[in-house]
Amino acid sequence: MKTRILFVDDEPGILDGLRRLLRSYRNEWEMSFASSGQEALAIVAEQSIDAVVTDMRMPGMDGSQLLNELARCHPEIVRFVLSGYSDDEMIIKSVGTAHQYLSKPCDSDLLKAALSRALSLRKLLHEERLLALVSGVSSLPSLPEVYLEILETLRSDGASLRKVGETISRDPAITAKVLQLVNSAFFGLGRKISNPADAASLLGLDVLKTLALSAGVFSQFDQNKISTSDFSLAQVFDHCIAVGLLGKRIAASEEAESNLVSECLLAGTLHDLGKLIIVNEYPEEYARMRLMAKGEGMSEYLAEKEILGATHAEVAAYLLGLWGFTDSVVEAVAYHHQPGLSSYAEFTPLTAVHVANALEGAAQANERTAPCAGLDMSYLEASGLADRLESWGRLRESARDSRK
Ligand SMILES: [Fe+2]
Ligand SMILES: [Fe+2]
Image 1 (cartoon, rainbow, N blue to C red):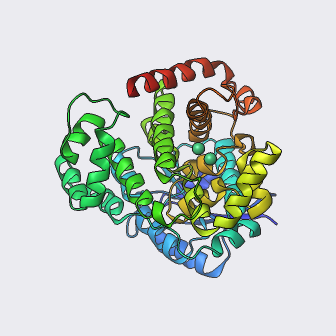
Image 2: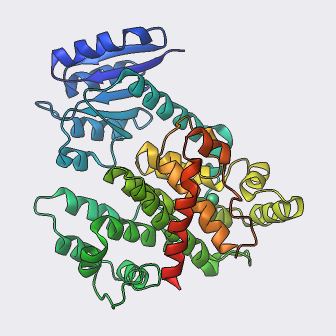
Image 3: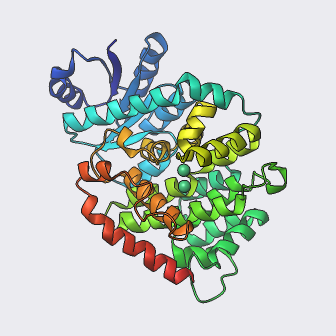
């Protein structure tokens, strides 16, 4: 069946350009075109559409309003922004509502690759075995209120470090957890930080925002309610923070764009969230999975697939998809143990999370594991990034030394 894509732009010239540019895909894609948000919603209400690619600045209903409406009424549709404006304001407005951002003029192969990646990710997240697993979960964690408030503060005019700090401070439990992290060996700041605004000015808003998010997500789980004795919530939390921070350093060392660096941090700090859901909801299966992995010397994620039908990586990706994070973040989490399943052969958040996870895993295993255990070398070689490994390893070493 053909993929049905709707393009929305108020400039007729742009739509004509897209029509011409994408002519060669007409055997694979069924394309519709709308000149306004309202027209787009009318088309979506009548026809079944797989993906919407919209401009941001349009008179009447703008792109961000259209995306909000689509997210609310047709969450199954893939939402893309194709914008000519690189100003952050419109992008920030649509955070949480678009799956991916592309900028005009857009190369047709790039658009095609991005769309097929988004659609195959959706296919994975709708696979029956995964849905069966998550539908058996009594309550999935929710996106923390404080995080939504931070995004809201950032969207408003005059957002400042102080305002974001105040937003976080309104939640004392999360503030305490964030300050504990900020003052921990992870950051080695050398002086005591006693409020979120100071933490933001030292570490940056992005780091603080993500720490508040992960603290808010992890605090929805309780170690005392976990019946399996060989699972430490604190250990998984620390590992996730370490992977997020190392992923961010790796991306920065590759001189990645700031958006991509943020996605590496975000995906890293939540990559093993699925483990918490599994151990809470399926304790017996979790125990069997551990035995199987140990007994047969196999990776835990493969044993999870055998016993539960899906992996912790897929469970977390499903949840992050529901929460509206971008495809790069969802993909990084979904494939963090098997990056070869992604169709991208370049540096993405998946690369950073996969490598940081393997390096941090080796560090945690006290060098009992070979330094490359868990690394997919053929993926790194195919991406032309295998020779970067040594310098990424050094980043981990220096992060670890500063934590001592
Ligand atoms: Fe994992
Ligand atoms: Fe991990």
